[in-house]
Image (spheres, rainbow, N blue to C red):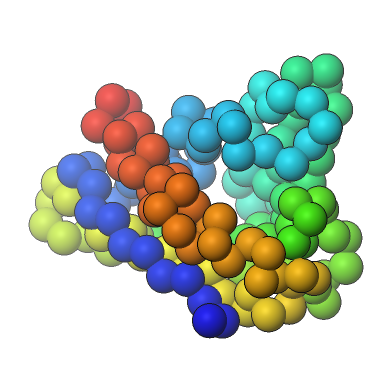
Length: 153
């Protein structure tokens, strides 16, 4: 399995779907899904190519997850995932997988959001991650949280 693919349809226009996913990232990312040594106070996705996506701990510490490779509002976002099988940040870009998120209008008030987490084989000890990110508690749950956030925005 070199990629995980998930799709969710949300009841908002494509520009709003992209905005909630990116600018309101912290409003829907599960707080329990962090890799830092302390509880997470905030999940951050910087709004530009070359930007970071990372967590900020309750003590102010920061822990990177990856970088923004592609920033094409409101239709496409690609970030690296630099978290290895021990749930630690790996700074080596050769070990990074990628997450691509595409946003496509399905009528004026509905958007299909497609997520692909690819190049998993690049990650150190990636097999340790597959069950967690590919199972119901992984990308499926995260996209459910995102979908719920689009309904409350």
